[in-house]
Length: 406
Image 1 (cartoon, rainbow, N blue to C red):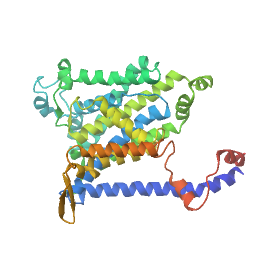
Image 2 (cartoon, rainbow, N blue to C red; image 1 turned 90 degrees about the vertical axis):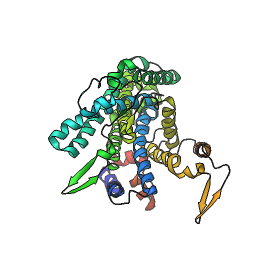
Image 3 (tube, rainbow, N blue to C red; image 1 turned 180 degrees about the vertical axis):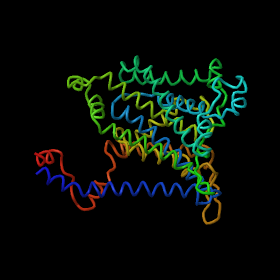
């Protein structure tokens, strides 16, 4: 009977996996065309590229926050702080040596006088050094954020609920203030901008005599790889331990789950990927300064998680792209003073600067009211499940599956 069950479920799973792979390939072909085929001067193309880059970055950060808040049940509000750490760690190690005197002009050229992409570029060539160097700097950014998380996790993870949220929020604000302190100016540049480091525009490949840009593919590649790792973690035994802590700490501890160990593991991993997201955001913005990494950034990320569904990875990804698209692109016309229809511009008095945010807030309220558990709830998008429904088949209940397997 076990073989019968496997044979019955295999076709949908195989077709679903094949469809997922084909969709990913099609997506990357489309992203490549956006950078290299479609006209860069087109305003809609440029806006689409911007939305896709930022959406990929925030999708990763939202999934990392969902790992902690949704799957482990730890209400943390320190995401902006770990993103700040990742952004600074990336920029510090990616500024070319000959630009340090210009960037750190108030701090005698800074303390770090080398650039990882530049060092690797001397061996692999400019393009190879930029790609691999950026990748290494991103990993360093995640590791630095994870180290900070491990240090502050020792005291704060013994707190629960609102107390944990307040402690992590306070940490994020302290980090933001410390990074602007002139005492660390030789490393962080104080309250001044970090700039001239490797960004998305520098990620490209040369084939023959033709140079192809990879500026949009790169953040998608990092985000896809990172989210895949989180998915594998959630579906592993560690993920089941995280969920047991979320559902009932007393029962989880009674079953032999080490609460502090698993909370620390979830906190550190979540912070690592938040640092990676911060590094990608630094590449996207081309400059880094501590001031924008306020608590409002964490609230924005939390809002995306809630809209997508707490405990749903695909929900966080979908909500991130919808949120960025609506706030950065689709509702922009509300700030323009009117609308243009059939080559005729109509002035509307209340379409002025800031009205976009009013409408966007109303849209969010409607979503929260009608989707109280978010767009996806705690469910995941499954191609195999979609194919099964298209074929008119029902999902096999867990109890029935267990009986058949026996």
